[in-house]
Image 1: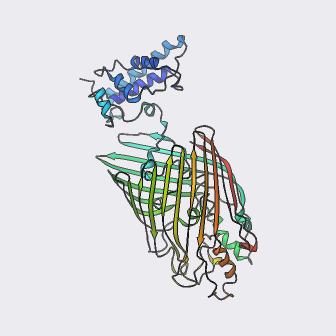
Image 2: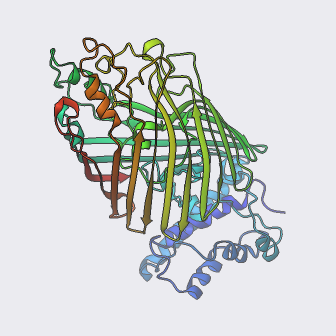
Image 3: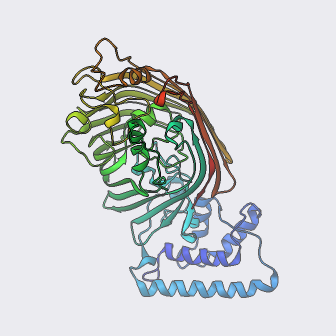
Length: 538
């Protein structure tokens, strides 16, 4: 009979502490297989009533421990004494605490071969590295399950290193954080005076999970820390164009809530309530700056920066049997709290496997906002991703309805964020949306040190006719705005990220668009944007 209150997890912790004292925990490859096996057997064979535990551990983890060369002989004796003392203290703590942290229930994720090799043994569900180190490398990004299989913290702009905490049984907290500094120049906004600047920002993602009796409960939150623009933004009283676009930059807040939702799931079902990543479509390129919904400086293809909302607020139901992925959401349909009783339906049906992901999506709503400020923003489309080794090809195409529902409002009267491409124009009538279609395709290559992306996309708006122009005294620039809207947008994007180490990365991204004659302010719009800087993953 084993000691009361002592579990395999507790003794494993003690062994790990002893092993950590005897080594510097740096290089696993420096030791030969026989020598690692020798120390393996040296550390664990005397565990009470578990005589073959070293065999089971050796099979389960393939001797994949951070063993290193031993210290100098004159210091080994003292280190062994300290290790033995730590072992005694931990075992005594387990005997005294009973049902405390040391006697947590061990996960039952054993393979069939492990059961055959060492029947009757209980093994820890996580690797010994995760027991010794509070912050571990999570290659598979465990919080990915709260977003769906396709999206990971890496794609949201984080590294795959998370701080993991297990405060009590069946509870786990994962925290990611990234700080970023860069220089950006976007010549599309030259007429506003905000075309280039240095910037600093940060983002953090937290995911708390609790599992009990087959149910999974979790809370996921993501926050952005932004640096606002200076208050001295060019706005001339007799020049309403700049005054209208100034709201795009003044609305940028220092603190921004990107995501916050609660999840309840069981087996293949999950229900999300709150603000989450939209279930519409798929975009696989890692983001290199905070996705801000105000100044439209997000480095992405046109349909992702101008058409598809990245965040939805509402209720989402997900069902994931095997490779099938079903998601449907009932949401506000806008970036923030709803200003109208109208709600949106957003859904996707797809399949997700290792070499291929594909799906069709739709979002439909009668409009965002109220009365003459209400805007259409409906879209439907498909997405596809193919993966082979380190290469990934993805594409996405949509049909889009947009524009103001009524004609009474001019573009210069917009105060909640104006589109540079005049996507808020009315299509010569009440309740008649503007229409268009577009998409992109990209090629992504990821190595241990760098990530490279090449991307090309287009958007084709349906031209607004000049047969029924409005009163020129009320809409003095209507024809010029119509021509800007009717221009086809072609955008080529490139991204190169170089990882100096597990924390520091150099980022370079930018895109080139076709030039537009006689655009805003009656000048050429130069479609060039660049971001270069560095980011640090905590």
